[in-house]
Length: 393
Image 1 (spheres, rainbow, N blue to C red):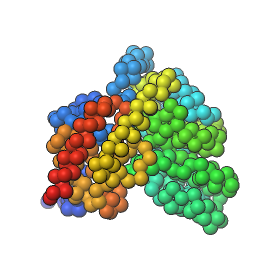
Image 2 (cartoon, rainbow, N blue to C red; image 1 turned 120 degrees about the horizontal axis):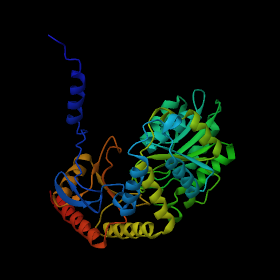
Image 3 (tube, one colour; image 1 turned 180 degrees about the vertical axis):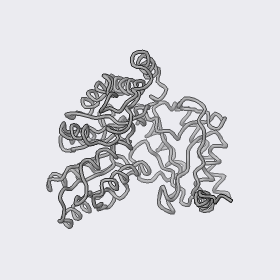
Image 4 (cartoon, helix red, strand yellow; image 1 turned 60 degrees about the vertical axis):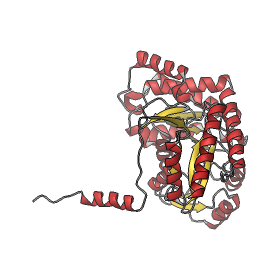
């Protein structure tokens, strides 16, 4: 009889289910809009990272179609061999201009951008100072580098300074922080972290995945928000959230980009992003540079929704951005709340341990510029109804 060689995987899956940590993946059956079809049901969409509503924007789709006609559906090679198309270079030039840096390099995702840049800059005998709540892609990039990771207290520049002064055995050092933290929606004190980086001569890196298209002038991100141009050495970003497409990038000094052309493993060993995606990202930059209308509408919606939720008695945590956590405490409560929201026609997922700490489970509401005032009011009404029902249990 043949031995079951993967029984341990089934056991691990069952353990996840028993612990309430098994992820149920819903299926989207329509384009990302203010309302979306989820598992066959039309519901209000307060779950996607589509901050500016660009994921189904007509100009983005038209740009993608034209790129397919001119360049085909795929590059069929890695960037370093035969996959660098004129569109890739145009996107990188435009991103550098938008972020006001010397140069930029694009990748297949924001996750890949972190996996490329961190191991390329530091390795064994080096130190990384990392905010304790940094995103998983930063954590994985740090682990791949094999550098020693020293965590500092969340959003605490004094804790960073103490760590820098305490850790004296190193070859190179690097400070890394998210710009906007995706679970709580709070913003890194990048100006204070930059002061520490400048004082001790340590390169400073920020991942602005949830800040670009949201913070700064016309969505130029956290560096622009704090007016720190020239003081942040490495900016990592994603093109899959506010830009509504897919991909990532590293922006900063020209020598860093040149080094990543030589040593960034996702650049060297994974096929380039498709022409349609690249062209759509360029179209997104066009829209952001032409007008601040979408960014302004996003913030109008954010202020209105958060204010009304507070009046209804909900706790939205420490959020300073359109990411709106509705704090509910224990994971079973949050998952039941999410289910009831969906039953009432609102799609907003629950997050519990280990994604967030125990006792801090929440519904994470993601606001967008494409939500109308009527849709916001509908969502508020559903939250009120479910909140009253859950309170009565």
